[in-house]
Image (cartoon, rainbow, N blue to C red):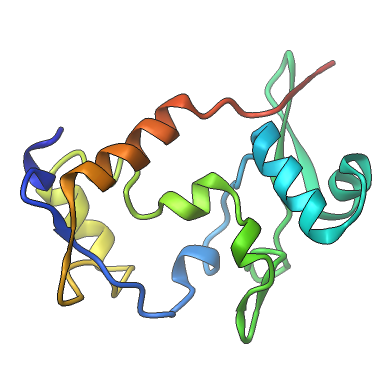
Length: 147
């Protein structure tokens, strides 16, 4: 990894919301994510979890993930975009610069079949910015509630 972004990568969000909808998935939360979201909504963390999250069974405990609507849209996706954009979780802030997406030119191009923002835009996202996003994903510690 690293070769495909050493000169930066072109990406400009096209507002299609594909990354927030269409397919089932998980948006796992860290404590920082939960802090930001509960502050944004001005409710307690336990209220936020009860209202907007699901517990994903890992066997020994549960990870906390945002819930989805019946059509797999994120609970916070509206016709105008993300309802909590300024407080969105790390996973959302770093897309599409996830290790699995930029591990090779092929995985980057494959993601571009779903995300029309890949290889778009007049300026490239710099290597240093991509590495910062990668490091934050590497440092990510999801909330785990033990059984």
